[in-house]
Image 1 (cartoon, rainbow, N blue to C red):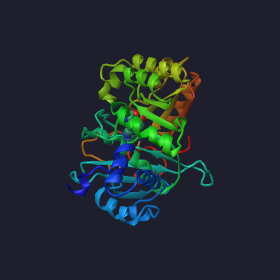
Image 2: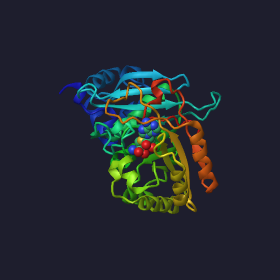
Image 3: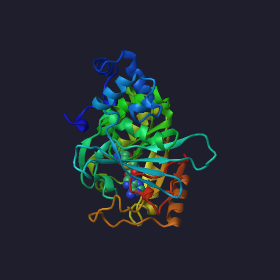
Image 4: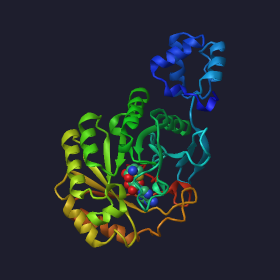
Amino acid sequence: MSQQNQRTLLAHTKEELEERVVALGGRPFHARIARDLLFAGARSYEEMTSLPTQLRHALTAELPLLSSELRLMTHASDGATKLLLGFPGREEGSDEVETVHIPPHNPKSTKGATLCISTQVGCPVACPFCASGLAGLVRNMKAHEILEQFLRGMDVGPIGRAVVMGIGEPLLNYKEVRAALDVVNKELGLGTRKVTLSTVGFPDRVREIATTSPPFQLAISLHTPFDAERDVLVPAMKGVPIEDVLSAGDFWFKETGREITYEYVLLGEHNDTPDHAHELGQRLRGRRANVNLIPWNPLTPMSSDPEMPNYRRPRTEVVAGFQEDLEEAGIITTVRWSRGLESDAACGQLRLHANS
Ligand code: SAH
């Protein structure tokens, strides 16, 4: 079997890993040491000098440490680092995801960076303004692949928060996402309130995870208060009334005590009109929710596609007016202008979210 098709260390359960290590001549506790050292930053067995030399050689030959390859790393002028990770053994270019490491606004802050992670290769939701879904879903990521993004991110710098806002729809691969986040919580010590899941808000799934999962922060991508328009902007939710999404959000708040953030990508002269702001205000009035307005990011070469409809960025004063209208309706509203627009960090998907 070629090395690239072998299961990696992270793909093994604790028991499986002990068995492998023993079969390679080690002691069961060496398994734990290897895993801990991987989490602590070792990126080859040779660096794991607390393991016996023979075992290090055997592990190097038999048990790959990581499954991804770092294919590209770009640095934005604002400090964000974007990683393109590929999975060997599959066709180049067809099996890649993005992970972004976004340091806090204030360079003196000790809070650590926000890591934006992907959960699927491609995306089945197919929002027409988003680069990720244009080619549809390639496959779900495995828990260990999702987890591996944290290790890659930690190689860039310390992580204090995670946003599941990269490529893919986390609620359509929730078992693997949850398994990865459980490890992140237990072994990397990242608290659940430091993790935000962003979803288009499948009502049944939102309700289910509200009662069965740790209380992550939840962000629901709404993008319009009008049902017919949402059918177009979020095709995977076609036919699901916005009211059902909002009432699932209310249920989330009731169960977890955590307020929902509704994300709203502002598409210039499209969904940024006073009518939209007014109707959104009506819909959210009295609900325990806040709104995050995201002026649409034009796409960069890394993610551009000739098929992409010709959206434009909203005008600054229109964004300000939209925010004012919502605040007049009593809804706390923040605007996220992405930083580093001139660089790859302004990728359609991976908005910069570091300061919240
Ligand atoms: N599928 C999930 C998570 C991934 S997308 C979801 O839809 O929430 C994370 C956020 O980025 C979503 O709100 C999405 O609509 C937004 N987004 C996608 N492309 C964008 C772009 N070009 N500019 C600004 N935001 C974008």
